[in-house]
Length: 227
Image (tube, rainbow, N blue to C red; front, side, top):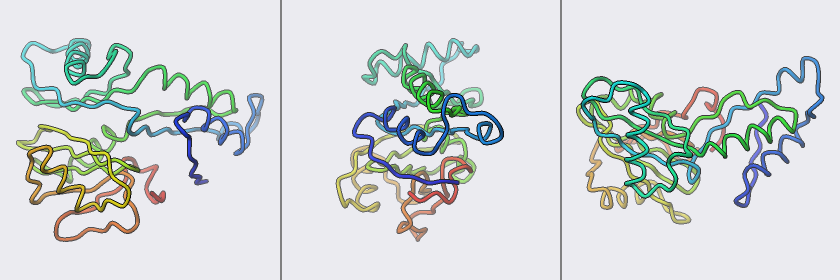
């Protein structure tokens, strides 16, 4: 699998189009090579908004949860939540749910840029819900999922077999993971004494120890890809 790292300068759609053009393709591509030009996109901060949805009696249909989620996101300061594509956890009765939203216009722009370069966007997921879905079994009923991204740390806090809270910290240059965890513990009010599982874009220098366990990437497609 080809690997490339580029700086997008705040214009990820244009950067993606340029990268795919360099990789080869063309809107009129044909044959086997054309059929293999599939793109799997994983969106991270700041291109997503996330919140925990407390359980609400009477919400049964998916549309009701979607409407409720937009209200909660608006209360968290998210602007124009009606323009988000939402991914809401399918938790059991009586349990809170993780909700992550990405801008529909962004997804459409990425798909258009891919198609224009002769590629097909086969999937587009956010790093938070993807990581939570893959590693919830490792976290168990109680614990913390610490999600690393370039420049960002997000912690999902789990208790009584449901996600209870989340908090995100913008990392300073050179800030270590222990320092970031300590800072986020103070800001969030969660002790994070044990049961920490580190996932996401984990640098090679971060390894399991007596404080945390590294559990891997958000999706099997990203296993082995350097952070």
